[in-house]
Every structure is written in structure tokens, then in C-alpha cells.
Amino acid sequence: MGQYRVSGMTVQTFANLSPPPPRPLRLAETALFLDLDGTLAPIAARPQDVGPDPRRTDLLEALTRRLDGRLAVISGRTLDDVDHILEGCVPAVAAVHGLVRRDADGLVSESSPHPAIAKATAALRTFAVHDPGLLVEDKSGLSVALHFRQAREHAAAANAFARELAEQTGLGLQGGDMVAELRTPGACKGDSLRAFMAEPRFAGARPVFVGDDLTDEDGFAAAEALGGFGVLVGPPRATGARFRLDSVADALDWLEACR
Image 1 (tube, rainbow, N blue to C red):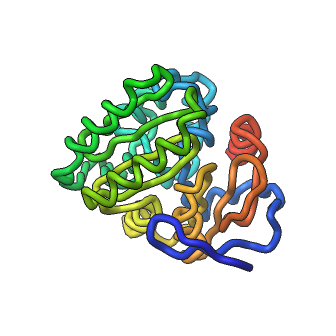
Image 2 (tube, rainbow, N blue to C red; image 1 turned 90 degrees about the vertical axis):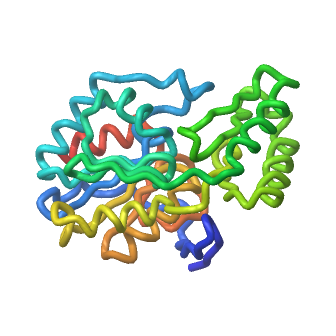
């Protein structure tokens, strides 16, 4: 085993860099936590290009019923984005990596925005004018992301600029798949999983977190610490997940087999 730091915490990684695929879940004893982009939906060139999908919606509705509501989506997206993409079929959602959380009963709690978010957003927009492939995403005033998937030649400069802004403002810097995000310091995906597990509906179940990105590693770690496990979606890499699926399509097939 090894370890590395992500989102301010130490994450354990397993020696096998290509974990095996998971077996079908025992739904009666499971609480299921799902990332969205790269897990339930393929990564798109632009965040706004991801939309509803009937197969995915039907699957999540069926799983929510079978799990008696013990299903939550934990995403870097805003709450409005998650509800649009999933057609409002999942009541329990943690959005903006946990800075916004809607519990299983529909009660929404939200962190207060850091006062430097507006300054960081303006600075990133100025940086992005140099290339139309650079996209700035404002996440409800709590976080701002600079996407460079369509301008990969600017990746090093974008990451360096984001690091500089984080040092100047005190904002949290969160890396991801072709994105650098400056966020209000606060809850992470692991914190969100723990908060859901403290709710009566989730309590006592075995948490399973499914995600694809480094931002999901603290979710894997939180699930492991509570007696569950993580499932990585995507290519092999060092991870705290015990199991792995190759792609979004494989993740959806596995979830359908579980239901």
C-alpha cells in the first residue's frame, strides 16, 4: 500500500494499480454514492453539453426504489446542473464537491461564499480571453472552474495561474480532469458521504462510492473508513478504490446488473 494527499487529506492507495471489477451489490445492505461526470455520464468537451438520458434516469429511479432511498449523487456540478442532467430523479445530492447538500428529505444546506470568489472569477475570465477553448464555469458563486479540455496547450499556464490565485486569495485549489477549480474552503466529497451516512435513511448501511477523478478519492477513503469501498471508473491508476470499471458504459451496465 501507499498514500498521497488530495483535498487536504491522506489517501491510502492499494498495491494493485488495476483493481478487479466489483461484483453485483447486495442492495439490502448498501448505501450507494455516485459521481456524475465520468461516472454516470461521459465527459463532454464543454460542461453544458451533458444532458438528460432516459436510460440513466430510469436506472437511477429503479435503484433509488430498490435501495429505499439510500442513493446520493455527489458531484462537482451545481445543484441545478445535477437536477437538469438527472431530471430531478435523485433527491439526495451533494453539489459543488459538497459545498451544497440536499438531504434525503429535501432540506438544502449551503456554505457561505468566500469573498474572493468574485475576484478569482474575473481574473480567470481575463485569462480565458486568449483562447476560445478556455471555458470559465461559475458554480453558484461558491466556486469557479477553468476548463482547458479544448485548449490543452494552455494546461500548464492555466494550472500555474490558478495556483497563484489560490495563494493570493486563500481559496481552495482543486485539480481535476482538464480543469483547475478555485473553491470556497469547506466540505469535500468525503465529508458529504459522512453527512449522508449520519442520516437515519443511510445509517447502518455499507457505503459504496463510485467515481472517476482525483476529486473522488476522499469519497473512496470515507467509504472505506465506514466499512465500505470505492469503485474507480476509468483507466488504471494509483487509487484508494478497491475495484475498477473501465468506462461509463461499464459502470451503467454494472449498476443495471445490481438493480
